[in-house]
Length: 373
Image 1 (cartoon, helix red, strand yellow):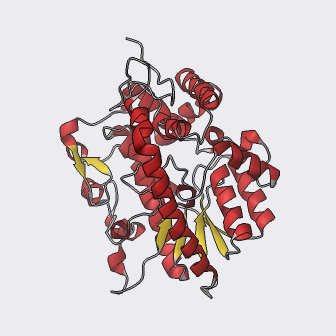
Image 2 (spheres, helix red, strand yellow):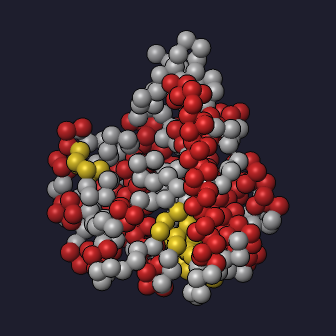
């Protein structure tokens, strides 16, 4: 049976929880049309009010740096850096986690740092550590597939690094370039919930399984290592508070010289190369492109162009299935991880247990990992 595509937002009925009505419009769009737009705009205005007050207070902090920007080198983080430095006059430290960043994205990073004259800290995580957990998670995926399982665990490590670094440098604010379609709402919208930051993110199940060793405990965020009463940094996503238009952001970063051209600004091409293997796994196991919900949300809300993403999704799926052009990275990632395509598996639903961080791991696969965000 062929899948049906929403005539408004491009979601397909093979995405969990999505159904199309007789007019070819999905249930998510109907909710949006039935008052969801007004409620979201009210929420955005609330976020914007808080962000404006936060930016004013940060500018007068008197600290060496007013904030850190999680700087991936994509168009959104480049534009975010520009707005904070130029429009708001903040003393910003750009922070890049140097793992699997494509050469094209490094060009964006270098151009933006030079153009804005900001200090730039490059963190080099352990390649062995990353290989170990990615390999394990790909063989033991949660019900939402490879992108969700690997990337959200990866985010816990990266954002934990940012939190520790911010505390060490006495920087009270961390800004991220999440678009309004990112990340999953249960993780955060405009602000990561302070209660979440106040929790231990250590993946204790993976320590018991042997994926991580005891001496690696310090690699994971745990606020209990700090003195009682310490003020923890806030993590904010300004694009959830500002008006956002994907095409305008792309045009602006090119006009400003932060990004060379549309190819360098394309989120499909600037993402980490492992992403192509993750997409292959999700097309195989879930039957649909894992990024459809994210970009369909932007299309639904008028923040991205429907025709553009209809073409992009078709090209992405073609490259992944044929393993050509950008899809060639699939074979290289498999080699680097010492995996076969048949190793990309989802664990049985009964085996899934939540961790204290909200990332899902799988209790029947907690044996010693085979010699894996």
